[in-house]
Image (cartoon, rainbow, N blue to C red):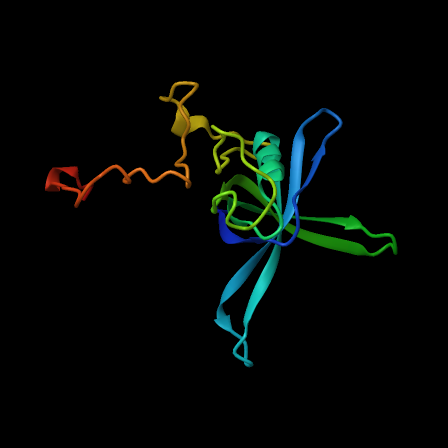
Length: 170
């Protein structure tokens, strides 16, 4: 069975950061994701998807993202229910994010928050129950698994990049 979700959208408001009684960070936010088709009036519609992210990625999300930020989310769908104040059963659906990717430079959405030097825009991580360190087993503790969007790794090159057939993975 597979339960994977990949979304790209914009935050509808600033993320809400809280801590559990045991001190675990959790951030909740809503992502507006445009549909790929238009309605009968020719307008694009959007889905508003509730997302939750845990631990350090939750703190990074709350510190560096704000209303309007273009964001990528990878995770799983989780459903639940509770009894509402009126006694009726309320059903919930949300995405529990394994990773939240910050898809814009810090000043492109016009915010007043600035990213400290040396901090990544993307934040990988895990949800409350699982950790996925497999892609970082061979990395040193200080090595980061991300590409900064404010630095062009090809900027120092002058001219075309030569690629031989041996360099291609196929």
